[in-house]
Image (cartoon, rainbow, N blue to C red; front, side, top):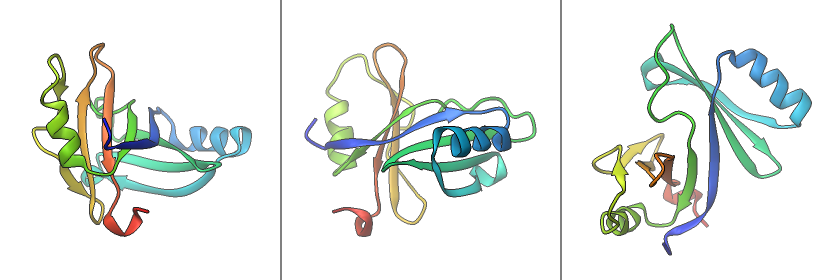
Length: 131
C-alpha cells in the first residue's frame, strides 16, 4: 500500500511498568519520551525512543484484562482513510475498528488483524508532525 511510509512503533504489554522501564532505559539504552495514563486511566503507556525507533509499553491498570489492542505493530501512514479503503478490498482482513479514530491532538489510528491474527495499527500523525 502506497500510504504506508514506515514503522511507527512496536507495542509490548508489560506486567510491571517500573521494572520494564528500568530494563529498557538502563539495559537497552532507550530514552523516555513520555509516560502517562490513557483510556480514562485503564492503561499506563510509556513511549520510548531507541535511536529514532519507538517502543510503546502498555500496562493495564487494576488487574484489567489485557486489551485486544496490546502487543501490536504500528505502521505510519500518510493517508489513513485511503489506507483503510484499500484494506477493505482485501478478503480475509478482520477490522478491530469500524472507522479510523482521532486521538491525542489530531493523531488518527486504526486497528486491524492480518491473516494470522497479528494485530496491526495504522497511525497517521497530526498534520503538523508530518514531513
